[in-house]
Amino acid sequence: MQRPSISAPPSAPVKRSAAADAEQFYEEKDPEAGLVPLSVICFVLSAVLMAVQMFGADAVKSDPTGESPIMVPSASVQSWESRNAVTGVWTNKFKDTLLPIP
Image (cartoon, rainbow, N blue to C red):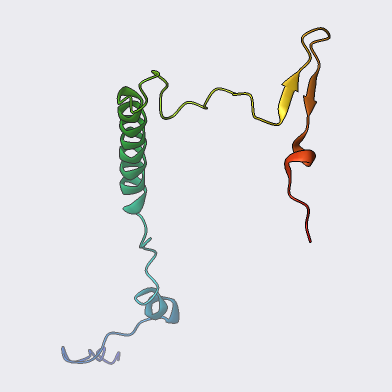
């Protein structure tokens, strides 16, 4: 004769394997998954803001000569530079304008 199988009471804990126990603690979730779209949006907004600031600063002319504030100023002749009218050679006398160091 066969013995009837023994069933566990409903309050008994369910047997799990070691892999199943470890699986409940190590879920594969990326905590930074939602940050990529946010970073792309922030980058696009910052690029737009930079363009608005550049073109806004270009439209305001603070100099009556008409030069833009974001442009490199034109080269002007300094007091220590001189050009020979005949040969067209520039000479630099910057060392002569410096005060001697005591």
